Length: 131
Image (cartoon, rainbow, N blue to C red):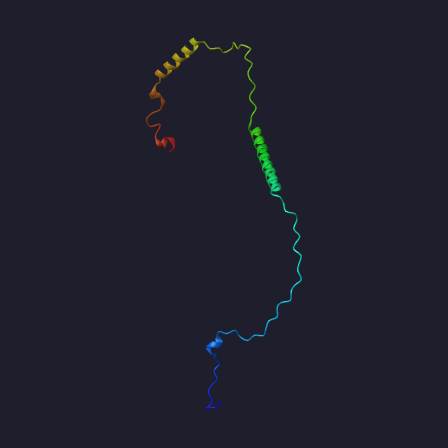
């Protein structure tokens, strides 16, 4: 480098800074051949979809009903045979006097209990019971 030479700076003036750069002209892309649109079947009517939905709902309700029927039929038990009441039963009949006599016997037995013969005061302690 020569001392008399000034260094070259690569700065563009402001005006050129915002201008579009000089690029070679672009060629437009070649047109592509038109493609055929994809084949679409005929439009389905909404009425057909409604019928399909109704059929599905009916099938689901039928399945739920059948499951409920089988569940309830498995839960039912057979009722016991009814007794034939046409034959009178004479054995083991109890009269009112028999009930009164038994009641009097029970009352006498309760009145005559001997509490001292049951358990002593030390028989029901925690250590004798095993607690």
